[in-house]
Length: 611
Ligand code: AGP
Image 1 (cartoon, helix red, strand yellow):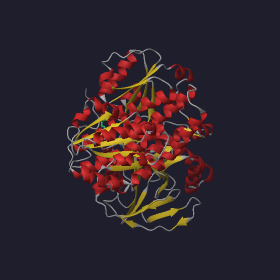
Image 2 (image 1 turned 135 degrees about the horizontal axis):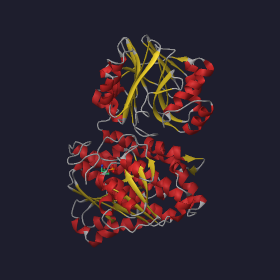
Image 3 (image 1 turned 60 degrees about the vertical axis):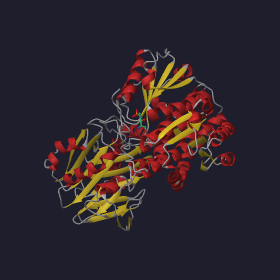
Image 4 (image 1 turned 45 degrees about the vertical axis):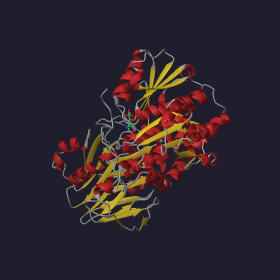
């Protein structure tokens, strides 16, 4: 995600833009910039770093007078955080400036097309392709709105664009597809923003731009056109959120906001990497020969990232037939791992800055392994130092407890599993197609599970006073149990542990007594009867059983459960993506009912950059 702000009115624009960018920094904060149009000239200031760095450069706006302007704070997806990759981007020829939020999926083809037309590029971003495409059509039509409409039709993927044109110095243009943009109608000025947090201080009368619409903002007002440039009437809505609620999109905490963002985050991470029913990871640049020769995979990470590795281990072995081991980074580096040139080490990290994972990565390379990283923060140490990097496009994850990062990391491991399995001839075409089809259906299924948050909230109201909660599961459900237990303990401070269900009888069951809550994760159908037996074991010793299972499993676990949460059926490989949602929401509501702070739990940090 990135943050966009725009203003056209009587006031100096840059102070307003800076104020809005500070409010949107939670959407992205690795670089920032502003552009103004004054006396028929575009002027630009942009820098790597936080908004405060930009503020210093433009001296609070005093060095950039102009009453029509655009601002942007970036969360890098294409191209590392650098001054040149920061937004706004100016077109070749310098007449048009653009800020962008989203992912233009066909940017490489469009860049090649424009290069062939003589356009030159100064950045690695998909945004510079957008601004030059608009310039291309402006050169052809001489009409900026027509140019924007024509460019929009050529771009695939998601975008929210703010546009300035030197030849139209009194107006600001905006258009969007999938990425949000909201317009604000004020007294003496009109506003554009990625969300209301940036403009609520100035106006509460807003209009959420629809996909495909083109807006023109000027001091005198706001006009909206459809894709055929026919003006459409708009109805302003009154927003009554306070600023804090606005930053969280109206949710009470970033955690629940980020839980609810998972369908979209999953789709954004996967859809650019699946085309015509095939997984396309050519961006990796890994040779087929290397993939065919991999003899062992270590998946290394910490906390939630490690639990992604535990799930991925089952999938790599089952579908790609590659020996795989998930190991916590802090253990890996001292365990004397057996590594040779056919060993692949996959480092999973949301921040890309976790000290233990960095150290493990460096140890792996020192021992001769190739390293592939799955990272959310573009240009982070782990991404830069690994041989190959696959980014999750989850956007900034503000809550310390990881949710959408987990889901998008899982998504990338599914793609890798399929990609490797296919290259090694380890998976049948039928199963490959079945998984890819199910992946495309997953965002809708994720959204369905999240709609049922009231059921989970009710169950939390029954159990939130429990001081011990155990999670049990088998196979891929064991991986899920580990993550569910971590979510609960780190935000509710309830003592919780996860056990491979078959292990209970070897000791842990001694902990079970009357009223102990055992969450039975039972989505993996092949071992359902086994997990049912384990639930009976604990129930016969007084435990309360909350089962998480699929719709097809519900009838087989109900008789041993006090409560059952069901998720839609899907391919076995993908079960953790659905099963984790009730566990995340359960942890959230248990912590909420215990009065815990949620987004910033005691003793924890979002990125553990010390060993
Ligand atoms: C999980 O909710 C925690 N935030 C923590 O376990 C986290 O996953 C771990 O510290 C790894 O962080 P990383 O993904 O940024 O490397």
